[in-house]
Image (cartoon, rainbow, N blue to C red; front, side, top):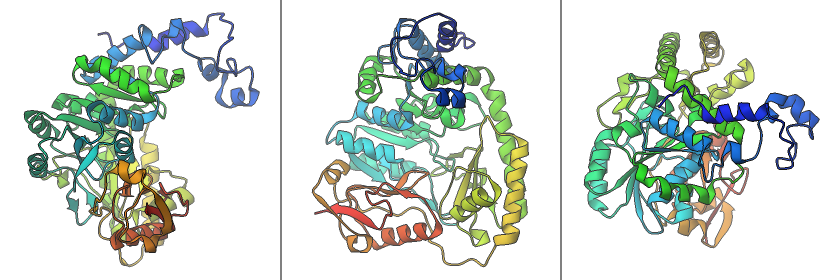
Length: 479
């Protein structure tokens, strides 16, 4: 297919120059009804914030320009079918789970998944078979899925419907997705890939293998993270085009019927850019990230980690575009460095946790900003370094699962002080956001380790979310 084409973009350009009188929604009527909004966002933007109509197709039932754009995306990503998602990659992740599992079905997955995965289990009633990831003791981070652990989980749960893989994790860690996919298919199981942070894998051969290239059945791909589209725009990829009709039905259970053409056009334009220029663009991102790593490591006390972590199993590969930096050598938590960068240096990085921070590099970055980050980190070391104190050794705590997420979430519950919840079953989430990986999820026992971790994260300034109690001083438990 001709990747120079952008059907949605071209249809919107044509529409913008037409003389259609808008007696439909949205009610701002191309910006005329809300001057402040128009002044802020611009006429060019509001002129194409329009509703579905015959010349522009309909995302819920695409037959023209959206269908053509999705076919171009499938071709660019090496998929049988691509679906545009405007509810975020969280919706894409949930849709791929809904497509393969119903109440009582088992899914094998790592516990360090994004909240959206467990949300899907709450909604559809599928039962998780968690594989506790191995951890790196020095960095305190979760790694990928070991093939041996997968084999054991399959043996113990031969009736599981699917295996879900992070490709990659937030930190850039990749499992052996090709081998896991082959193993899963040999046992009649589907493979689902959360590629929220792996869009770029499809467009540069120096990066780890993509889910579609590895033979996975379905992948959720977040173009707005590393691909340059607008926030909340995503894609769902299916290896087999035969899944199209069923998947469309699943997506339409939750996808908005008022799809934003700003988001849709950004997917179309970004796909075009990546398919034509992605290899060169991501060569540049890799070079920039490696330069930043070398300079940060030269400061001392920081550890910007990379491919040296590869062990052929739980770290099968590493995404070099991820500028993940351990800060404990400074005596500072990652979240403390995150807060200093934002509050003192006007540098907004992606997230900080107990021991690390992540600076997210992609197609829009440049060396000027990289130098500013390096300079700020050097100054933080000079001004704020102190002797290393007590730190919680790992961000990952092995969960004790007592109930399925759905059963726990819908159980009769009460709110208790965090310390009084120990030994009880939680019915809600507690997580640091970002990255949105639950510390505690519905159905899991509240342990002393969990309470200590939450208290430590609060003390260090992590943004804790998911609880009914906004202060995360209380938690809902069964009973």
